[in-house]
Length: 590
Ligand code: GDP
Image (cartoon, rainbow, N blue to C red; front, side, top):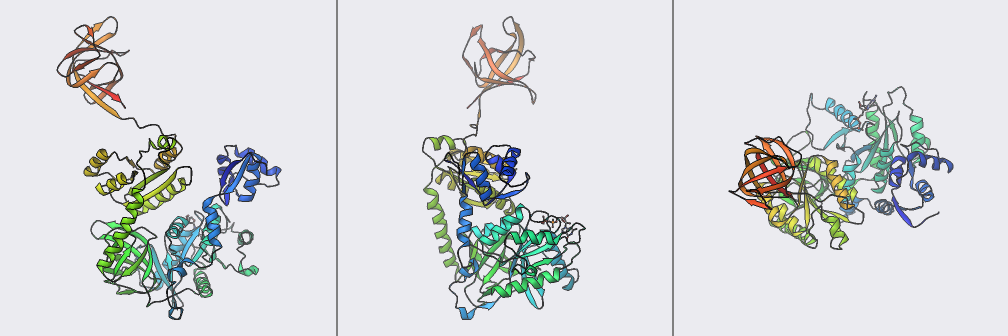
């Protein structure tokens, strides 16, 4: 491989367009290079790392596998699935089979949501008439007298996030592939995630009702990705379904039970109570609402639960049908109330004996967060790169506040994607709610920047931030935020300019001076005016001129500045439309 030592990090697979962008070459050029290497690919096609490495070498880059992918591959080599690790202390003899927990992954528009709806509606049809089920992020269906738990936030972002926190929500991945579209980039990604998590994959070949459905072509593609279909002699179960026409749903559910049986999914219903937070939010009237998936033991109303740094005695437990229940065994998703704080999706929860024990555990965790935080240094986003160049900062610490948990997760994911470069990016704290004193204190202590998404900083918080010099940045659009952070990380963010008002004056009369055209005779009402500073002229609420204060006179003398109470003549370069009564504001930009 030719190389000039220009290292280029690449993922396990990459779309041609993205690859071209990475090396700043035209995609056409890249496609031609691929062709000369015997690979025919279009701009939207994905190539694997090895292929990408060969072409980028032609441009003088040495490809290295991205750290994250390397970790995934290393992890893949491990043996024990995460849920097994979670019940590591249990006596094998006490373990009993439990319902499998299933998550649905796949490329966008291949029918994940439709399939979840179809499964849920077939069950509701057999269950209570017209039963409207509450959305809590998970539901259960019954098949052959056995239960199956579905997580109903599809997509691998949620799946990966759980894993990142050390939890494994799902026991089985159902990979949805549209029979008319075949394997797409996100299908590959989903496979990579499931493999890295060592979760068995089965395939729902969806949209078989479509005239252009081609199941055999998809099976071929699956086989090429080492998911050889069972009817081709392989070990991957492939079920043909139509979410739209509710076809094949029974087969799919039966298939899930078979996969569950062959994987020996177990827990000890009488063991230590432990599980994963599926989702959580703050309800204005009910307080913290959380969906917990019990993974071992049996959760009961009145239990004291610790989830991340949130804790509390569970006041009420309801199932996904909003029915109040007293106990929830392994694989049961439940909605609970009574936690002190909003935990994060993917946090592992446990039951402790007393409130006191919970408080001690949480205090320890908070202390750990604080000491981690204190070890870091203060920056504003604009100063970041300068500090890095001065050798004063090597990382960017962020505190993220968002309106709802649902926007928090994608923000954290997007930001995490920006990390890994020369400047480390750490998210110290991410939660829902407005920016308050506590956030500012944490930011100040840990030299962090606060990012608010669709939230405000409350008055006290803002005041404290000014005092402590904490940078608060508010956004309403995710990409604007990621764009700013990315620019800051690359040292391209323009310094933030702040206007500082010097003084104001009122125009009393207007006269003509040969040199400047029309001149405003003014009285300074507050502060001062300075020659060379910026000036803005208002008529009522309209701004009618913005520019430099180019001439300033007091009683026919040129002066540099003039203070409150004095009269003066002000001239503006090439602007003559001045009227008595106009207000003038003099300011500088720092
Ligand atoms: P998701 O992005 O994977 O959640 O996909 P959706 O469930 O939103 O489905 C995407 C589109 O495909 C929607 O317009 C669905 O109506 C359609 N769709 C889903 N399943 C089927 C199916 O089995 N047959 C047909 N013909 N269309 C389907």
